[in-house]
Image (cartoon, rainbow, N blue to C red; front, side, top):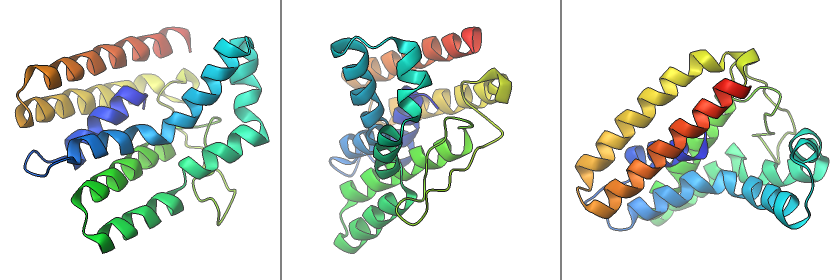
Length: 189
């Protein structure tokens, strides 16, 4: 899924209005597995002026980038984080950990040749799913409607749970961004 979809689904599934800070922590957990990609790609594209073809065709698959992705996309690391959160009985930390695990589980199911080693540090094995959220050669057109339904349902849950203007504007912006990015993937890939 695209990052806005991860954000909406993570908040809808892991945050509770009655539990202070779970919304922010679920948002952070939903975003953290993609943060390294944004930092690495942003520095490469905008500061170092490396062409996008090289960034996403070569650097993305480099051993350095993949070793960074292995850490923040590790089911093992996020699982340990959840166990620690449960032991601390910290509802915000549990929301954070669960949102990160949901993100990684959906990435596990929806990445093909761009998959990551989700079992680091135990294994460098990479599962290449037959499905991709963006690559039409791996059924992106089939995946997109399911993602869209998840985004719409998550948005409804968040709107009902936090009926304030600020939250609704953020949800609306995330939905629009998700639809725009989904459209780009389906048109060009």
